[in-house]
Image (cartoon, rainbow, N blue to C red; front, top):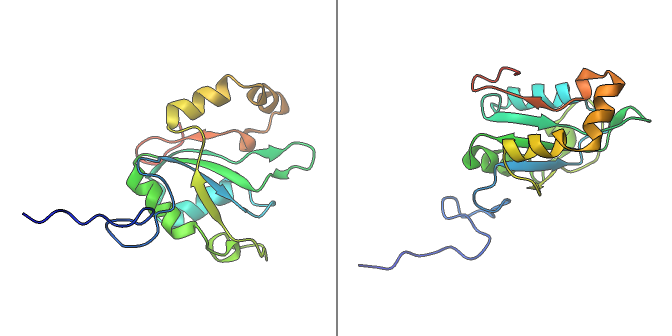
Length: 154
């Protein structure tokens, strides 16, 4: 039998395109979000693009003083395939095309987050000082969100 032909490093076997994330990645960091974009606005755009049921966690860190995001978000997907599809669609795309509403000249970047999986992201935030600060501010729209299988907030 012929040996399986493996693609060069960094290329996906299925498509022949460059793989953005390491295999098995479920938590992505999306960079270069327009600073005025809210977590809810990002979530709405992700749902419009078909990722509503694929996501189980979103967190867009906010600069408390300036009341706008830091330009990045953490997204956990239920499967590595959904995460890879998201990365393939968003990585290298113009922010104003993917996240319209602001005339941002930024280009979206997607990378593997340091902390992987819903449980790890929840644990890290729960045990961190930032959650205490977030709760004290009384800004529920700035809190991380977790979603059930149907995409509903839990």
